[in-house]
Length: 285
Length: 245
Image (tube, rainbow over all chains, first blue to last red; front, side, top):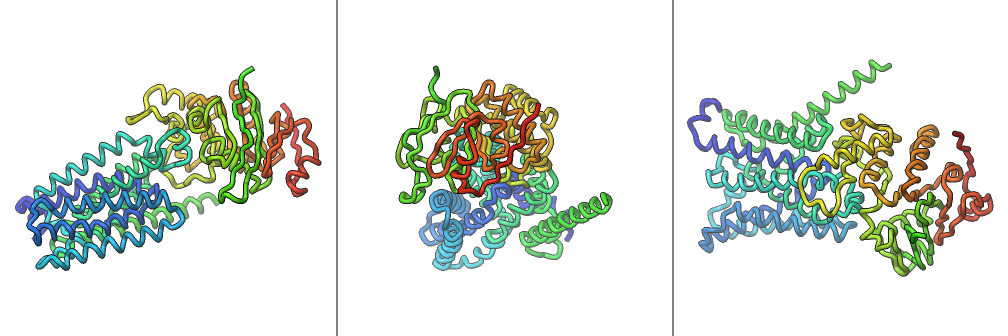
């Protein structure tokens, strides 16, 4: 069945569409910070630590009957914990930063797998955690996503001058009397919340691509950080919806389809810029 | 007579605690002076600058800037860093960069106001870049970027200007204009700059702070070949380009 025909009929598709829009907004804003501040690997590590939170929450719910421990809550807790840990590590141990980030990346994931192994009958959850399943988003998830979105966007708008200055020239920002470390931790916290939003859409493994590709494309198109954020948000929403629509008919995984589309768009923009650059150079001669 | 703008007493610094980069530095920079720190690479120029800015703590000794500790004086200093250390791909416009100079500990959140914008536009005019507000920073030449960073340093109306290698990457004409501008600013502000090049030093600055593990200060007119050979162990090119009005 065609996506556009199915959309008005099925609530799960409408939820998926809304989830894509909500995640895309935060993705564009925070993804731009992640790209210009060059903390992609940190975002990756946070994303993989989310599995520990998802696994632990599932385990508490199923094995111990703790109904409050929703996977989303677990994801938020794990992502924020990972952000604080990585933040403190990278501020204190600059020379071993990449090793420690790599270690946390794998350990976070391993902890999640252990919890899931101890939770009977929930092996299939693993696949949707890792690769996302936007079609499983429920109404209650959407409300939590909206809250996360509002938190992320309001903080980024309110502190935009400070965050921009810290990302552009940390030393100068420090000399202006800004608490650079605090802003750095805040940025990692915002990244953590955004990662949780995106995990719902594309899953842990693919988060990095959706966080960075729209921002990377947007960076080629605009000359201000706020312009980059707006363009990245629009692109992220467009990729998610296109991914959803394209994958629906042939029953492909929506997350993976979205990422391939984003990747192709990025390559296309790079190639186009090359061509334009070459054309300009030849005209100049 | 007012107190020195920068005052160091018996200051030593070592990164590893054993091999001092600077030892027993005593130095006073008087108000409204125009001084240049010169010295060989690894001689401690950048370290001295970072000590004055409070980015490093001295192992021993005492530093006072504008009559207080470097950390407290910080936001009253206009600091111009080297543009080469900045990310060229960062999407930011000239006005955005200059406005960063308006940030401070008292601004908690929210956008810049009209006074900030007026100050930023005013300093851009001062450095000869009126009307350049909306240009992408990445598209500028080296000299233009230096001017933007100077405007950023000036936009907070600093009492002391500290400039790290402001002449790097500038051609001679641009360099001369740039230093004319600094001389103009020096009428109301103390200016201290760091340079590894002696070329322009003699024609512009009034005193030279030689940094080579220790520090000694020479009035520019007493600087001769011997002092400089001693400082650089004979490796330096002694270029004079005389400054004509």
